[in-house]
Image 1: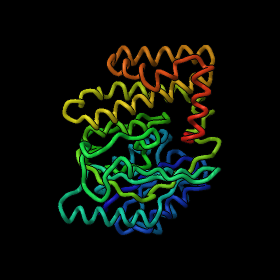
Image 2: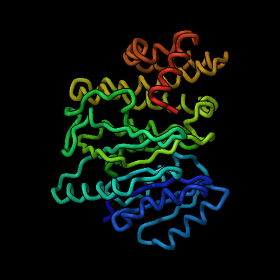
Image 3: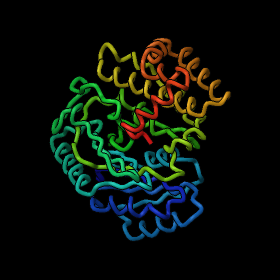
Length: 333
């Protein structure tokens, strides 16, 4: 049985996809690599097929019509046979030593019949101005199985991202995870919706994931995010609709607090990007998303209104300079 299924959604990825694939092959006996060609118009499919031919026991190639990043994640999960499921973007890569340590961990946990629902690892921002590793050592216990009760409050730059989570495949299928197609920023749903199903975790303090950030056409580029703000808004609304994070406050306080803070962050990002744009249409969209939150979850609305995202609703002369300062510190994009 394969221990981890890695899905690599690819769209016109011929210039960089090989680095992503090669970084996983160090563990080829223990992993399954599903390359999803999402309707590419370049040589992505040919490159993928060449790898499949060379490593038929490890690599599977899926050729499908374009459906966006979420569609690629969905297809990988549909076909996954590994105990765990991990998404690797085609312009990113995995640290080989960290991968081998993760494989060893899964083998050890499996021998003890104690497989956890989610493994958390560090990721590295690989930016044009240097690298920065994001770790969770001040928030999560190391080298032990733990639950939400054992976690501390996550810092603003410590939220779980798609880069840092490795879910047990059965957890994702249990929560019926299906990301929307033709939509960016669905990774936020990926690291939000399954969490109430996650009971046990293990944190490995290793620089597992190398997250390249800096291409002008990248989805997290500020100008690109403003251009695609309607997709960001769509994701936020889907997250609001998914469940009420206050539901878990009584029985699972730390989980509830994390989910609430994450939604506050989503409202913050969405509102400030609309503030940066500053057009009349964007101002109307700010009203719309906040009205939507108020209509569907008044308690969460009140919390966000008094928290960080509430600050972003202040006049642009205050909120935008504050965002610029924070961006220099935390390097969001």
